[in-house]
Image (cartoon, rainbow, N blue to C red):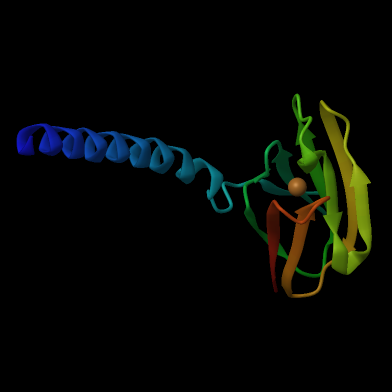
Length: 130
Ligand SMILES: [Cu+2]
């Protein structure tokens, strides 16, 4: 009996380890920080993020003092990240299931600008620096 119990425990541990590996493999992509998703064109700063089951990249590094556009890309997005909000700027927009939507953010002050999906479940942020 002890051997069988030991085998069950060993199998469970291996299975859990496998699950953790799978989850670990998925996170680096989600948490990628500023992979040059920000460009400045004609004095206007464009921040590109994608929306599908959350926002990628989660954190973007942007510059203060420039007119800024949040460019949100959706591709078969039917979850609640298709409703995007930036509460401090009183912005709430519905995104098409697939396409690109530009949202003017105005000129940003230094600080952290927080955004979320419609329900406040998926966060993203713009780290605004001088
Ligand atoms: Cu949500």
